[in-house]
Image 1 (tube, helix red, strand yellow):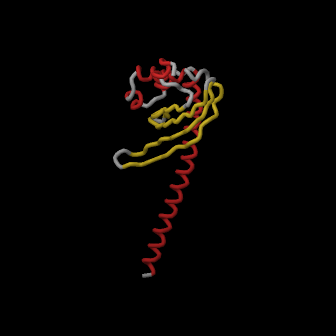
Image 2 (tube, helix red, strand yellow):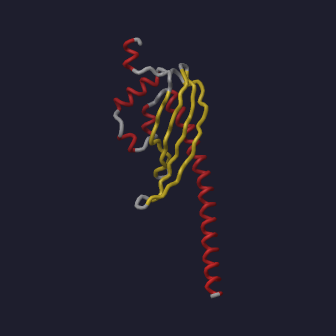
Image 3 (cartoon, helix red, strand yellow):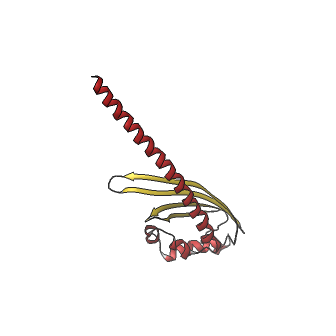
Length: 159
């Protein structure tokens, strides 16, 4: 019976060591992913928004995002964004990354950020979603929110 408890104790100690090591590695890896995803967002948002470059967004987009929109839709959206004028100040992003594991899919690394910027004609809040694919961060979602953007239908009527 005593031998059983020694073996059980050794197994429990091994599980604790493996679990603790895994948590430590995940925390270290998570901090590194947070830093690199934040750096990516803080570089790309000003690059895209400076001239509202559809090409820059598409260059950094996941294949799924590129395939979910047409050039006409992007042109319509970005023409609306251009009424904000030039980028005056980018205030940085807040958010972080997430590592998830799914059976049959494996590891997925994603990140989500909210960033604020001031333009010549108003303030903007960006919501950006990222995926890390083949060792590279890509934009999987790009949302722009501003009270200063007037929808095209209202612009044409002068309302």
